[in-house]
Length: 242
Image (cartoon, rainbow, N blue to C red):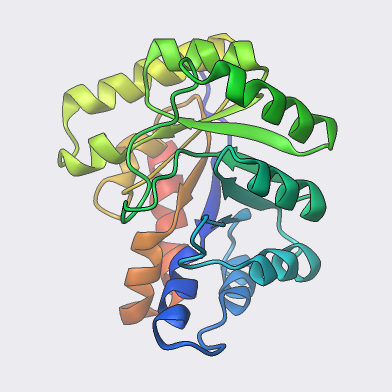
């Protein structure tokens, strides 16, 4: 299979995390989104959590109004988040599992076990012209469930691969999942825990259309600047595809 162009979505959540640690308006995540665009990002990802620990409702509204890049809104499958998505009309909405006590998203969405909860949300988002993706583990059961739900996109959870120091077995799971999803006509994205050291093997998977990366890039920006970090990440992704 010939590898398609691989997009980079930059998650700016943790710029807002730093802002919220002190209060006030600095650093501004929307400024980070502008810098990401200047550095060649293909899209902006932002997770509006129930507890608003990083992004706020006002941040999402500003991103929609002020940023030319597509916005991928990560959201839980709740009535509150559905209403916010329908109000703001981002380019895409990625439905993720969410637990208040977790530090970051842990595990994939149970698309198979929560079909009846997810189906009306997927339907309403899609009817509003919002591209729906489901953040799931690289498991056949979850991929097939996402397909049955009518979501056009899945995002494979790369956390186990990243946390295993690039395990061959975990990479094989991702590769097999990507092949299955593509065979069903799904667009395949991936993300979580990716950085310079481990992105290459994932980026090389030919079925992938997009990687979403945030925490590593924001952390690296402390030392090199955000634009430099994004350009380096893109260079590594493109080298893997070459």
